[in-house]
Length: 273
Image (cartoon, rainbow, N blue to C red):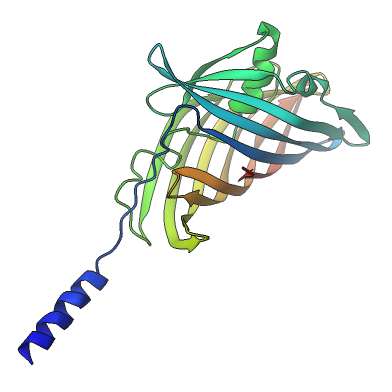
């Protein structure tokens, strides 16, 4: 009888042990992965109407190894579609088409962020900056921050970033952002033999941005919140899917006009092979 009780206690002890996970992308030389990205942003400009900016493309990423203290990733965008609508005016983003199927080298620092990039032609750099250093954050080693270690289901952790440089468009104008993100590991499931983590993220942000709308300069200060959901391939240490929606509101200036407006942003990134 005592033996049965001891066996039951040991079994219960191991069943109650929580499995812990660490979310760090493992960069393996020669590894290739392809993602499809979709993005849309809408807001109103008094007297001009609603502005809708949307784009989608496919990104082939290949890890090439290390160079000069950086991790080197070659990325090639293809099937690029980009369109801008302001009121009744519709215009295609021809700049985006110029980088279709043109490789770009991303130099990733030890923190997993892009330090700089190299392109085939110097004039393409601003176009690639918009694609890779836009408002949506991306970290190639620590997708959920360096605190995402030894995480159990139900745990939450925080990532804080200050003075992030980003680009709203291909004009080369720098914008700045600070963010505070709270992640939560919602659950872990196995699908087709692959262990998948489901993670939610809520980001509060403050940013000062500059952009060009129909040839006119616009700048402002805004605050907002983004809600993201992630699926992460634990076995292969890489993202499967990211979906997000965000709202920002603040004060802006354009054509000597000061106004308050709200931005609505949605995005989806999914691994396709």
